[in-house]
Image 1 (cartoon, rainbow, N blue to C red):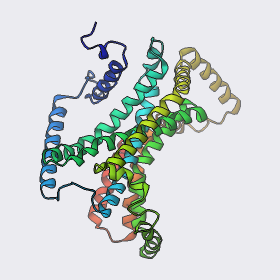
Image 2 (image 1 turned 30 degrees about the vertical axis):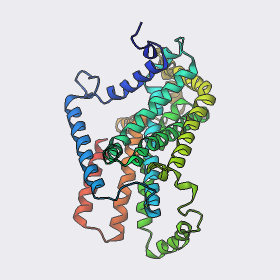
Image 3 (image 1 turned 120 degrees about the horizontal axis):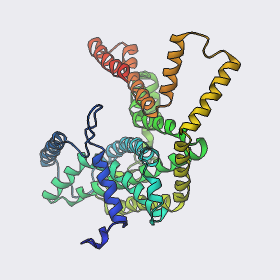
Image 4 (image 1 turned 90 degrees about the vertical axis):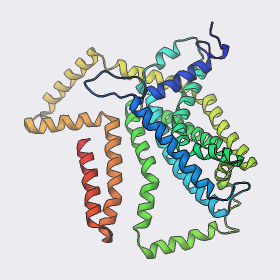
Length: 382
């Protein structure tokens, strides 16, 4: 019998603690040709501790020079913070998509969990909570020091950072899980592995690419867009400081009513996702298991015979020679690696702003050349 009844083996909190441990185990130093290590290496722990201390010091200096946060900030600060939260949400959704694919199809432990006495709804809820933890902790690492320092200064409203970021991570994780399960239903497991990775890359880089495109469309078109958009954000407009769209930003600065509303929204998203999708979650796991089982030796041999018969019937695939056949084989191998495809797609996306700067003609040539060389080398390495 465990000392703490709530953390006894097989309980929900025990399983959730296991999910949190796995998040840190995935940070281990796993190099090819060496024995895999569980957990973060000591060098990484030291760097992380130094980073946290540096962020706390920066937050101390920043808050010491700012007016005390005892009431709601100015509307411009609320709107700017709302835009920053939108960018953070896009990055959270990207991370949650990648972690959803890993949690559903790559870890390979769901068959064991589903065969245990635990209900499927509990397993799905804990797995979803683990994704929320993995997404939220990365953003809390950089923003929670402001809450800690704010409490030391007696500014309690800064504590709103915690529930706001956690609620934002819950909404992003719920959307990512729903999107992943929907893709499994529409496309199947194999295609979902590729599409979800690509969507994660596009979501993470989408806001950055849009800002670069907006900066490169020309002064005339940019002024026309501003003329139509700016009135929406002014007083009395549809997106002014009283709009409901700024509830997350007000919650970030500790507004009590908005904080309760946004936290309730996050809890509702989590409950609805766990309540109405856990059955399809089980079917998705079963489909993933079927895909793995179909790659047995007998199936591979049968596919090889079919390919030989097809090649003999058409006599077109292997007609070009050894070099072309090797290139064709390599391209097929790349198409079977979703993580590699998403990595290459993300690097290509980050190359696009460089070309915008080159075509505009007002960039420093040496800096652009260095950036393109770095990204091209990284792309070639992938």
